[in-house]
Image: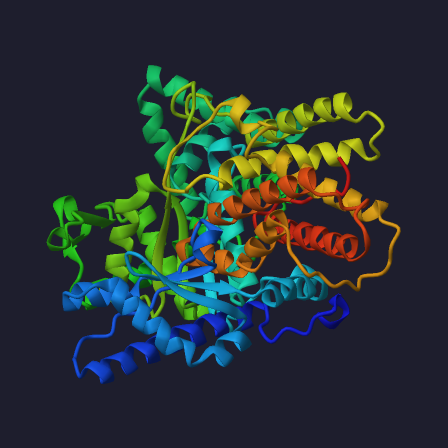
Length: 596
C-alpha cells in the first residue's frame, strides 16, 4: 500500500532512515533556538546535548526534551520560562516542523518541551510497512562493518544441556539484530573439544565401553562413561593420572586416541546440528579449543617478546595483572600444557587478523567475568585486538530446583528433552482448544519452542532465571503464545476481509488506533537500542505491548463490520501491526503460525 493509495501524501516519512533524519533535524532546530536565545540575552553558557524521549502518556506529546531544565540548572533561572522562550523561537520554523511531521510544540512545567506528531506522519507508517513488509525497521547503521559473535560453546561427547539455552538463544538473537541493522556478522562456536576431560572419556571407553552400544546412541552412552569414570575415580584416585596420560597421548598425536577423539567430535557435531536446526540457530564456524590449540605457541612467544610473560612456580608461565585488579593469569603450566585462557587469546588474535571485526561479542555467563577480563587485558597489552572492541555480553545464571547442573554426576536436564516437553504441552492445549486445526504438529512445534525462547529472551539478560517447567512452558500472560495468538487473530481478520479497496480517508483517529500508530514507528529505534545494549528483551517488551494495544483496539472497535473508510483504514492498521509483530519475533528467532 503506497502513501498516496491511502489518500495521503504526507511530508514526513516513517521509514527508519527518515525517522532518524527527523530526530536529527529536530535536535538541530532545538539547538538553533538555544543559540538564538543565547544571542538575544548576550549570555554565555555551554549548550547541553539535546536528548529526545517518548513520554509514556500521549497527553504529553510524542517526543519531549528537558534541555530547558538543563540550561535552567546551569544558569540558575526558571526552566519553564526558558522552555517558553525556546518554543517561541521554534514557532518561527513552523513550516520546517510541519515538513518533519510535527503539528504542535508546547512548553509545560517544570520545563519540558513537548512535540506532537501529525496525523499524516502517523498514517505514513501504514504505507511504509505495507511497502517494506519484512524489511520494515531495517537500517544500515552497521554498513561495511563486521561483528564476530562467540556463543553457545557446548562440550563435545556430552549432550547439550538446558543450561546452554541462554547463551545460545541470546547470541542468536543479537546476531539477527545486528544483521537487521546492516552489519556483517560472523559466528564462531568455541566448542569445548579439548582438555583432560577427553582423556577421561577415552580411558573410560577403552576400559568399559561397548562400541556397538555407543554407535546406537553415541552421546548419551559417552556421557554414561564420563559419569562412570568419576564414580570409579572416587574409589581409585589413580585414575585421574591415567586420564591425564591418555590426554597427553592425544596431544602427542597418538593414532588410536586421535581416531577416538575425531569420532567423538563428529558424533557430537551431528547431534548438535539436529538441536541447532530445531532451534533455528546457525553458525559460520565451529572453531573450538582444538582448532586454536596449535596457535598457542605463537601467542606465548609474542607475550614473552613483549616482556609480558613471567616465570612462576614450578616453571609456569604467568602474566601479572595485579596492578589491573585482575589477579595473576596462568598462561602455561610447568609441564608445558596450555589452558583455556591461552586458547582464548589465540582465538582473539586469529579472529581479529582474519575477520577484521569492529567488535567481538562473547555471550558468556557472569561467572566468567574475571576470565574474560584477563583475556581482554592481555590481548590489549599484546596488541592482539587489531582495533576490535572486545565485549563480554554478560548474562545471569539459570537456577534449577535440583541444584547446580553437573555432567560429572549425571545431573543434567537435556535441552532436547525440554524442547520435546514444550512441544507436547503445546500440542495438548491445541488439541483441547482447536482440535480441527490443520498442521497441529507443526503449530505445536512453533508454539512450544517459541514459548521456551520467549521465556529466556524476554528477561533482562543480567538477571538470573529460575528454571521451572511451568514458567518455562507457560502459554499465558507475557508469553510467545499470547503474541502468537494475537498475530493469528490479525491474520484471520485479513483472510475474512472481502474488500480489495485499500484507499481511505480518515478525518479522526480513535484513541485505540493512535496507540498502535504511536508504537509502530518506534520499532527501528527499539531494534537499534536492543543492539547497542545487547538486550533482545527490549524487542520482546515492545512486541508484547504492541500485542496488548492491538487486542484493546480489536475488542473496542469493529474492523470487518466498520463502514467505508474506517474499514479500509482499520484493515490496513491490522496488516501493519501483524507485520511488525512478525518482524520483531523473527529477531528473537521465533516463527509465527498463521492459524492457532
